[in-house]
Length: 79
Image (tube, rainbow, N blue to C red):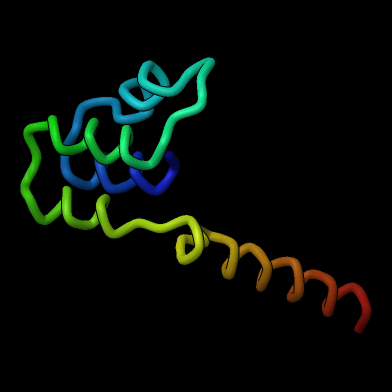
């Protein structure tokens, strides 16, 4: 739900964290359910398209930047 929350925040949705927490807390949620939730929101179709295009195999969030920070810190310590 993290990438969806980020998109919703940029799209101007009020408190996307709370919206998604209420929809997902305590249960497993499918991708289709999350897309349906987004489809029901009053946001531009382009934002909905971005949500529909999300895929667990391609979304990496901040992982590349975080990994680089760890590598840089390790290199500094080892130097």
